[in-house]
Length: 356
Image (cartoon, rainbow, N blue to C red; front, side, top):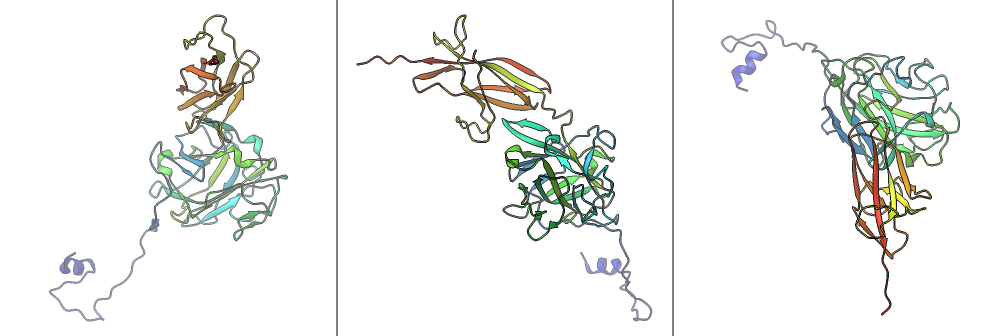
C-alpha cells in the first residue's frame, strides 16, 4: 500500500500539519468475526458430499434430513450461555446436575443405549451411525468440532468428565478423535440452513465397542478453531433415509462339477463355507470384515447394506484341492436403498490329483 493511501486510511491529509490536540487516532469496535486457525482441519466438510476419516471413524457431510424436534430424538444438546464467540462442550447422561453446557431438559440430554444407535454396513464393515445438527449464523457459518470421545458404561448416569485424563466416570474412551494427535473437523452451516436439518454423519466402527456396557456416551467440544455463534449443537442416533442400511446381497457357494463357471442343474451347494465382504480387497478374511456361513444348501445372505457402495464378495475354499471357476471375486454395486441383489454364484471345483 502506498504512503498516501495509508494516510488516507487514518484520515490524515498530507497537505496539512496537525497538532496532537486537533487530530487523534481512535480504535473503533468492528463486528465480531471468526478468526481461522493457522492450521487446516483434518476433515473439511464445507462442501457438499465431502467426507474424511480420523482414527477409523468416518465423518461425512449430511444433506438435509427430516430431523428436528419430534422427528429425531436427541440424546445430547449443547448450548453455551453466550451467543457470541463461545466454546461449547458437554456429554449425554441422566445424571444431574450437568457438568458443562448441556441443555438441562431430559428431553434433549439423556442416556443412550448402544442398541439404539443403528448399525450401517459400509464396504463390508459395520459402523454405528450418529447424526449431528449444528446452528450458526448464515453470515458466519463455519464451526469446528475440536474434541470428540465416545464411552460405554453399565449405567445411564455416568458423570465426572476429567479434562486431564479424558476419562468419564473413570471410563476410558472407546473412541478418541485426538488419539495420536490433535485433530479437528470443519463444518459449514450454510449448506443446510435451519435448525434440525442435520449437518454431519459420524460412523464409528462397531468393533471399537467390543464387550463394553449397554450405554453409550458422547463427549464433544466445539468452537476452538471456528467459534460457535448461534444456538445449540445436537447429537442424535442416525439412520437417515439416505443411508438406510436396507439393501441385501444373496447367492450360493456351489460345486462347479464341470468347471464352466456357471451353475448348471444338479450342481450342489457347499454347506458351512465362509463367505465374506472383502472391504480392503486384500483377498483374505480380515478380523473386522463382515462374513457369514453358508447353509445346508450353500446359500448365503448379507443384510443391512448401505446404498451407493461397492461390495466385493468372496468365499473360502474347503481346502487347497479346490480352485475357483469364476467370477472371483464377485463385485456388486448397491445403487439405491433397499436394493436386493440375488443370484450371486460362487463356483469352485475340486481338482483330482493323479498319482505319478
